[in-house]
Image 1 (cartoon, rainbow, N blue to C red):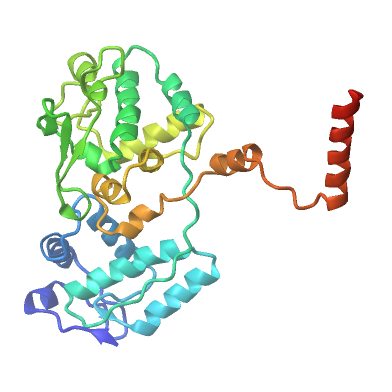
Image 2: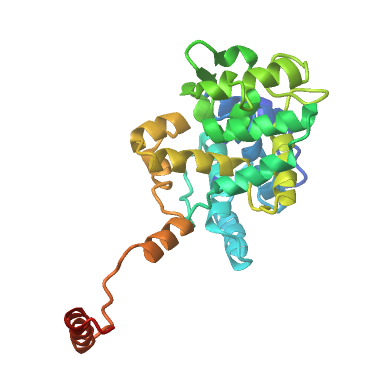
Length: 331
């Protein structure tokens, strides 16, 4: 059994039902876990930490005693999930949550991740994005904001949470850059932006959006009518627009795929793309070194490939006919 003696403070806050029943984690312990995740484990407070808690609470609701963690109990949970067809990528979210919990409880145990078989990344085409922009082409604050969101995603490759956290002061108009603060892993980075995206005249520019269409709420760059914009709101808006445009598979992260893939196609070094995306590991960026289905089709259909099926006799016959036609003028 994987257990760690709780502190006196924790013991007093644990609800014990009986010696044979599950001990439930209280709000006081959850608060300690949140603090540990942010300060010690350096996890993102608004995206990663809530995700970890969500998974742990799901485990708890399904009979996993987090206070007195039993390894066999965890294995049974994963076995049932695998039998029901859960993907390894989804199971690894529970593994990460459990490992964060074990680290907080100072238990020297770490569950191994399941091997993930990553499918090829699906990248939107320019036509897909243009179709979405057509859906939000009205001259009103909501459409103009959503139009700017799509363009900004495609031109910066920001994550959804990173875009939501952008402040008006994070834009360096002079040097055409934006400062991404506390991105994934709590890291800051600078992302250069095309000048036309910032202050172009005949282009859906950020300056035009701020001066004419932005809801004047707080100091965040993107806002709703009543509050600063949130990731859940953006995801819903993008999905709704994508459905109307006939590309329901597109989500906010799809624009990040578009940005990265097009940088590499344009000849950017992969290490530069890694820095722009804020990837801690190069392997994360290497996923974008794929060719799209359209690229594959274009290569096969347009490239002159030697036909191995044609026999030598047919080639000889064809050569004879060409020579005969050339010498006699008869075709």
